[in-house]
Image (cartoon, rainbow, N blue to C red):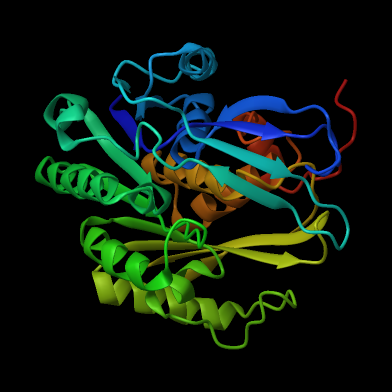
Length: 340
């Protein structure tokens, strides 16, 4: 089985217990996560040979994060050691009409200050079948963007499938810069993943008949978005998550896969959310697993959405669910009855 290489930043996640706000808490829980690390954990949980690549400082936080990844079966042997600090982000969980909030403290992190010479892509990509990154990583610094580009070029040289989750973060860069940088990277992408806002914010591709804040999403409109994205960058496969927000606690959740000029839609789930952060990454991990396992398009999108639906019920970023649990849900058993 070939390797699935995920490249990006892993950070320390700090959040108050329960639904306390940052301004009122006197305690913070610490876990470790990041977009591509979350995908690597999902793939390892599903039995794939997942490799996580990043750059981290030589300190105890790094050791803790590496132990966490290793505990899930993720290969950490290609992590570069260097720099002065690990990025941090704070999560305040929302409730009802109060939205969740994320506060970043990741400037000058080890990966943001990495140099191209820190990564031997020829060696990293030995026996690799899939390479995954997100739009978060090139947003960290110009160097990180250049490293992403070099990795994509090397992956294409070797015939490796490349996937990218656009994952636009307006706290990290502007839409115009994201459009320029991501536009170059998308030329190498085989599988593009986006949410209901990414394509509009990054590439100006807007879904008609959609009001994200009002929770109204148009399937036809997103079919056009996927088609436009696929044609603009010659991308064979485009997947879009469809989230209808009722409140911070309750969302409608579905997805769409576009291949060979045809749209495939999953069923829609009504989710009562335990932890939303990492939901999109769990979709990406489920989709990569499904496509690389030879699933037909409809089954692939059904699996990805079911995996992500379950992740919304799991605390913290990592999706700690099994193939069996995912297949049970995608096959129609969402009763939540106690399993004895």
